[in-house]
Image 1 (cartoon, helix red, strand yellow):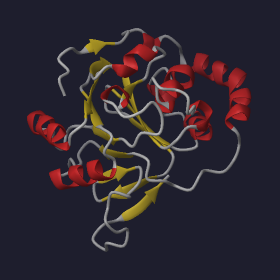
Image 2 (cartoon, one colour):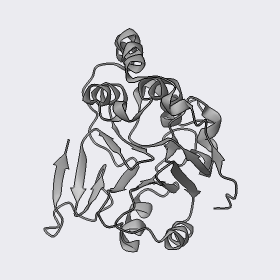
Image 3 (cartoon, one colour):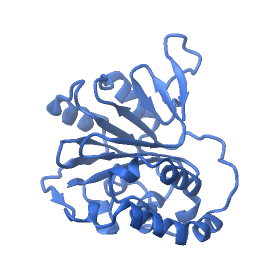
Length: 252
């Protein structure tokens, strides 16, 4: 990957607003934002990116599963892991071999909470800087960092109509949504546990998302599938949905 510098986003940002402050912002703004986003039904689920989550106490994906996910989503990959005091993001892997080398060096186990993301580009072209996960921040410059520490990380699957712009060449719709909207909606772990907040996010993005904080707290937005011990935003990387040996439970 070539990333040697790890930057750390503002330590105070994650707690700069209380849950009450976040609620006041949503009460004031959510109506007009929802109107802008549109209230249409979810698009038919598409094979745009895949998020794979290894929760605490669960196994990590195998090398074969990593290869399948990368093969179906070949525009770059990354992962984030909760480390107690920060979330560490490593991304920009444009070849599956480089990703596997990094994961072998990490030696993640059952106690590690890790979120993996595999990209299909829908905006801002194909390149390492717009691979995911992204930090939860209101500063777009941090979206391009390939290795950083942050209080909370985000991975997204789908297209966000609210911030989609085919003329945009620098930032993806996900990066723009995080900086311009999500950073005003979520400020602390209480917001991650607030079903109202998560439903508001789902209503705006009309797709799927996972947020991870430093303690290992996970917040799912949209319907995810349980694939054995793993949670996945879709299962298009499988050769067939009808394979009896997999549990394909849909989890809201």
